[in-house]
Image (cartoon, rainbow, N blue to C red; front, top):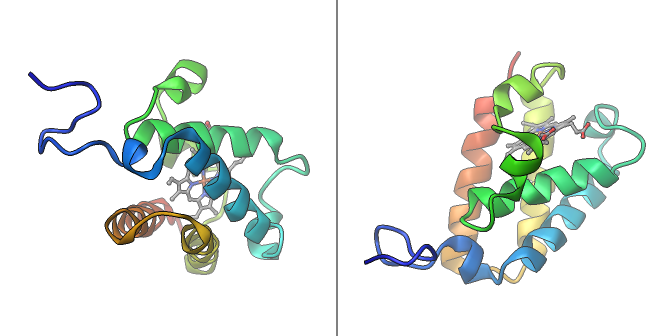
Length: 131
Ligand code: HEM
């Protein structure tokens, strides 16, 4: 029997290993503090970042094994489709990755979790580059 908190490898989800919702709330805050400083990114986002922060945090919580509140609120992520209105070139992509890695750097994640987060953000950002 596997408990919902366990993956197939019997290891707790990354969500549980890093300490839950609070971890992702802080990560997203730190990420957006960098977005504020990067004009190439900032112009794409609405002036009020409240919703954008909430959606990204809920998505990451869900993706890394926490509650599926993102799906309940927003439906299927369809990230490629949701990013199609924005011109994401290599510069925007790398600015996004840098902002997120800044957040990961400030986080309390240990080396294993840090490596998993970096790998995921790097590969998902590459997959969302659309020009
Ligand atoms: C590659 C560079 C990226 C750029 C320039 C970018 C930009 C954006 C922008 C402008 C929004 C809309 C925010 C709003 O109006 O509320 C957005 C939404 C979002 N992005 Fe990205 N993004 C990037 C990569 C990523 C990656 C790698 C992920 C996943 C880890 C991600 C996850 C999301 C999520 C979950 C949303 C909210 C979707 C929703 O509306 O429910 N983005 N992004």
